[in-house]
Amino acid sequence: MPLVKKAEPGKKAEPRLNDRNVRAYLASRFGSHVRVLGLTVLGQVGTADVKGYGYGIPVKVDYELDGQRCSAVLETVTPGGFGHEHMADRAQILLWSHAAFNVLPEHVRSLDVGGFRRDGTLTSVRDVEEFFILNEYVTGEGYYRDLERLRDGGDLRDLDVARADALCDYLVRIHQVRGPDPALYVRRVRELVGHNECIMGILDSYPPKVDAVTASQLEAIEHGCVEWRWRLKGYTHRLRQVHGDFHPWNLLFQDGARFVVLDRSRGEWGDPADDVACLTMNYVFFSLQRSGRLEGSLETLFSRFWQRYLDATGDEELRAVAAPFLAFRALVMASPVWYPRLPGTVRSTLLAFVRTVLHEPAFDPARVNEYCG
Image (cartoon, rainbow, N blue to C red; front, top):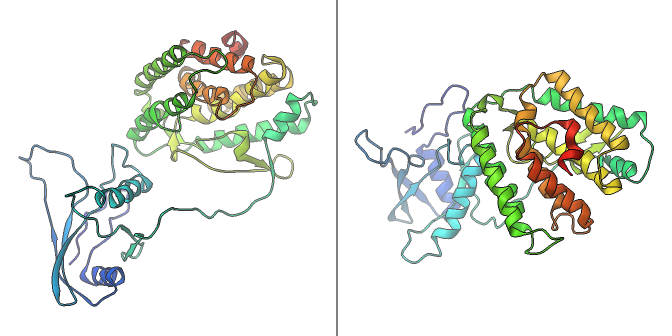
């Protein structure tokens, strides 16, 4: 018997449960002869029910195992808000539940955790203790090598300009793709501030004392970022395809200006300002290490990138929303965890930049040194 919700337009259908697929799965799980007796949908929420939101539709599975009648409940997590938009989000919840249910006294036991294959069959991942990814191997040189050379006094080459232009044009191209759901923009901004790998997580990683950085300064920065979160919630029309971690260590150049990108992070969709801020703050970062200000060849690349991107996209709002994305990247660069050998003067300058830019109504690329003042 098929048990499935009809797919919404543009979304794939949820997998069908039938006796054959469930029987094959249970046999692989328990290693014994299994007979499925019935599949029953449980707990349909009625219109009079107080609780209007729940997880996926649970299905009671009645089966016979080695002649003994047994029952279990098979559940999924409903795609949607509350951090459940992506398959990986839902997998995280179920993997945690499988481990956590079985260590709490009197809690219902989890018998297994698994997934649906594309063909509708079920598979177990109960024995997995850690997940991995296998990527293709590519060769190239990290873009940070170019920036290190410029930081250390190297001349600005035509190839440096061509590579910066190629990176800019790449962002222009991928940012043309509009996102599917405005709620994903709100989520991405929320995660920018509150995610463990983003602003609050980075701030929490700062040790109690380092280069005269005080807890009150970090608290003030956090408050400023929260204000920006509420300010940006109305910009959902800006949702675009993004890389999400577009920094020089994730960019490998091969021949000339040809490159490949690595380690896309934190989802497919976000604000284009995230990618632009991520890369261009590195021109500032390497220049600060060289002379304590944005100048010379790195300033040339910084200014050229911003102007080229704005000219190509006509994104008049970019400067008005960029501040928290710039602040996030600067906080990473100033972090004693990520950059423990960074001179204290550079760390202080980056934090001054963060405090100032968060209080500006719009970011002006021509005023970076003023922001760092």
